[in-house]
Every structure is written in C-alpha cells, then in structure tokens.
Image 1 (cartoon, rainbow, N blue to C red):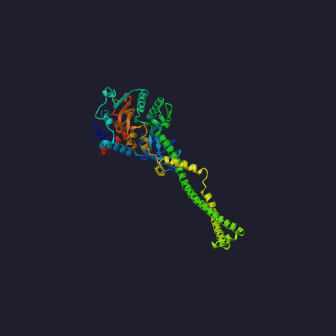
Image 2 (cartoon, one colour):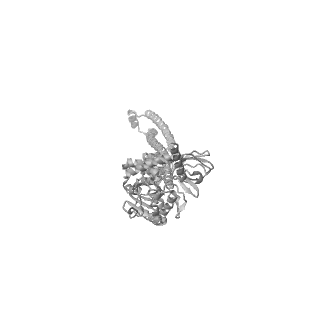
Image 3 (spheres, rainbow, N blue to C red):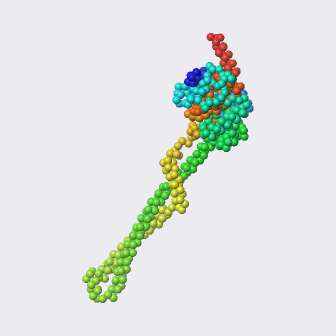
Amino acid sequence: MKLHELLTHYANQLQTERDRAMTLGLDAPIDIAKTRHIQTIGGLHLYAIDGAAAQRLFQDIPFTILPSNDCEPTEGIVLGRLKGELMIQTVDTFGDTVHHCTVIPDTSGYLETAATRLHDMASKPDAFTLGPAERLVPWLDPEETTDAADPRTHGATSVLTTIWNRDEAARHATLCTLLVEQAKLNKRVLVISPDHNSLDHLAGAMAKKLQNAALPYKSLLSRYEMPILHTTEGIALHEIGFEAHMHQFYAKANSHKVALRKKYDRFRELTPILSYKREKQKDLNEVKLLEWRLLTSLSEWQGKIKALDNTVADYEAIPIWKRLAMQAAGKNVETLKEYRIIYVEKTRELMHEIEIAQQRIRELIPEAAIPKDMRPEYEELKEDITKLGGTKKIREMLSAGEGTNRQAFIQNKRIVATTASRVLTDPLFKRVRFDVAIIDNAPRIPAPCVLGASGLIRERIILSGNSDDLQPWPAKATSHTLGMWPQELLDLSSKSQAEETQVG
C-alpha cells in the first residue's frame, strides 16, 4: 500500500470501530459510587474512581460527568488505572469526595475524531508533513508480515531510527541520550508512549537526563496531560506538567498585566489633574501679570498726585512771575486741585482692580499648586508608558483576551510528552509540527495512532520497543484497530452477531 491508501484503510477501519462501539453500548451512562479528588494543577483536576465500576471507560476517551451534588456537569478524559482505581482528568472541580455521579463516555465521538484526522491526512496531504511518515508504510501495512530477522528491524537512517531492546531501562537510557542530543540542537521533539503510566516513567527518566546534562528540564520538557504518578527518578512530575507551565506563565503574564493596568489607570488619573493644574497655573500667571501692570499704573498715578501736592505746598514760595506763567499755561492752583481729584479717583479705581486681582490670586494659588510627589510620579509613569509604545498600544494590550491560549503555548514548547491516541484525537496537535518523534513501545501502539503522530513530524522518527513485540506487529495492533476493547465485550459482540445470523 501507499501512504494515502494506508491512511484511508485505517480511517475506514476506525469508522467500523465506531459503529462497533455503539453496538457494544460503549456510550451508555455509567453509575459511579464514589469519586475522590486527588490534586489540582492550573485549570485541570485529577480524580480517582472505582476501577471495577468503570470497565467501559478506556484510556484517553472523553466523557461528561454528572455529579450528584449541586455542581455543574463537567468534561474530561480518562488517563488510566493505578492501584485498582481509574484516574480521570476533568476541566472543572465538582467536590472533594462525591458519593454518586454518572459518567457518559463519548467513545464513538472519539473514534469519529480519529477517523476524521486520518481522512484529512489522506485527502489534504499538503496540510501535513508526510515525508517521514512514508517510511512507516512497510511497518504498518496490514498486508505485510514482520519478521524479527527482517533487515527492517536493524540499523538506522537519517529519517527512521529503530531501537529494540528487551531491557526497558537500557532502552530508556538510549532514548534519553538521543533526546539530549536533539535538545542541544534546539529541535522540537514529540515523545510518545502507548499509555500514561509508562509515559510518566519515560518522562521522569528524560527529565533526569536533561538535568544531568545541565539543561533546564522544567522549561524544556512538558508532560501534556496530568501525570498519574507523583514522582519518578526523583523528579516531581508536576514540575514538568504542561498545565503547570501554562498556569505559571499566564499567572505571571496576568500579574504583569495587572501592574500595567494599575500604571495606566494611575497615569489616566494624573493626566487630567496635572492638565487642570497647568491651566490654573496659566491663569495665575496671567492674573499676577495683570496685578503687576495695575501696581505699576497705580505707582505712576500716585507719583503724579505726589508731584501735585509738592507743587501746591511750594506754591507760596513760588515767585510772582512764575505764578503768572503758571496761570497763563492753565496750571493755576484751582486746575491742580481738579487734576488731583482726577488722579485720586484713578488710583481708587486701580486699587479696587488690584484687590480683585489679589483675591483671584489667593484663589488660584491652591488650585494651581501641585503636590510634591505628584509630578515625579507622573513623569515616571509617562516615561514607562512611552517605552511601551504609548497609551494606544497599552490599551490594545489590556483589551487582549484574558483567556489562556493553549495552541500558542504548545507551539513554543520544545519537548512535549503525550500518548499517541491523544495526538491523533486532540485538535490542539493538528496544527503543531515537530522536528523529531520518539515513539516508545511502538509495537504496542495501534497503527492509526502511530500514523496520526507521524504526520506532524518534519525530519526524523525514532521507533523503540521490546524486540519480543516485533513479531505480531502490526497484526496485533490492527486486530481491532485501537486494541482497547476488553475480551468479554468482543465475545459479547461475536455472540450477538452469531445470533443475528441464525435468526436471519
């Protein structure tokens, strides 16, 4: 088969599995007697439910949970089993311990999403990077038989590398060494395991290796889902959780935004105040200038009055000929007295205007006064806002959506660890591209999931696993496509089909 034929084949098989899931009743509601809260990381919550009561809940299947308390229904996914309990990841919390709830799985929707992804890869190859995926066709073609002695199981190329070892620790050590090499080359790596439990162990080993190589493993490596285990290899897995990283990043970003909003609001508060103060200071300066002009004019008129008074006081000492000359010029004593009356009236008017101006000055002084610390604060805020691009730019930043953008955040992560089925069904991965894929326990991963993940890889795929699992692969992985139906349900389905045949 060619790649597009293989994709179409598995997409059709997934559609068949979807119909089969509906026949088996895998979407029917499940009553859960008890659910307990384990932990909360960011906006996700980890709960544990009785594993015996949830036999029809399979790994990575989405569901809706209806709690018996007053909490609203919420959605989530199944992570896996741990110590007899089923671990689930929910979007919202619904209490610490809930003694009754109803879980409605969406198995058929899950298979429909997976089939749609493979159909898109087959019909729109330009939207994916299918070069490295072509190398997997001989491995995943159901018409081919895989022999442990086949040369395909040995050696390595620049595009497809295989690592087979019965010793899981030795295999993980090799994968961790390869991961460190890719991290030093600044490659984007997608790490895949068949289930969340094994992924936790692999992610812990990789984090430890990155730490030993003096690389910042907490920022480089992200465990996409909430971890089932708390610690592995001495590494606290919540420290490398994608949700924890995103929560911390946006909490810090929001704190910066809060600080910026405070600065902006304070700047907007001080701007009209200082503008008002400037206007009042301008008015004060104008009134003071008017006062100075009035005082100058008053001084001139008072000088004229003083000159007249001196002239009248000295009149008696003036010689007769000068008196006659003054009278001839119209400056007799009576005229001087009239002038004095005019001058006095003028000074009275000026003094009244000066009193009005001084009263206005007394009113404007407190209005124009700026508190001692206000102007330096304003200048500092103005400088900060100018550096950030001005008030318009800040308004755009503050008006941006407050919600977290998981798509943008995952595109900036260098190493992402998740399960193959999550890559196939989570729409977040559809637009994300990686340079390298490290697929551990590859023979235990269903073929459609391996194909779905390989369509996101640009340069290199690394397959690893137990060499004992090579012989039945891909036949084992393709026997019922996703390999997740328990045998009792398969037997029930076969019995039902046999009964229908007999009736027919």
